[in-house]
Amino acid sequence: MSSTDGHWRRTAMSVPKGSSSRAAAEAHQPTAFATADLDFHSAFYAASGNRRLDAIWLQYRPTFAGMLAVTNAENQDLAPTFDDYAALLRSVRSGDLRHTLELIEEHLDGSHRRMLTAYSRFVAPP
Picture 1: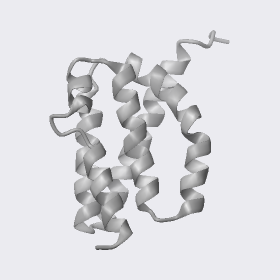
Picture 2: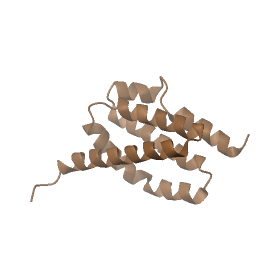
Picture 3: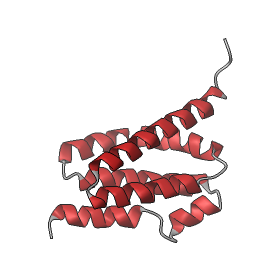
């Protein structure tokens, strides 16, 4: 088994499967879900095996924590994000690069929309 296999195993563990992450999503506990969300992202960078990429992510993690605190608090239903992560991990593990990239693009677009919606409440209209 390679070290990357071990990283993917840890990534899989970060995806809520009846775990505290799923419970946080179902109970709409945005702070607990944000922690699991960050752990999932961190596990992907660690699984890459690229120490520089992982180090850069660790620098940005606090910024993402702040964004997730806002966007997750705004979301009425965190379960779709949970389901998206489970689907993304299945796709990565299947080796289907095209499908994985489609899922990542959808995730990034959705995250961008949620972030703009959440932060627009803090900005006075011109």
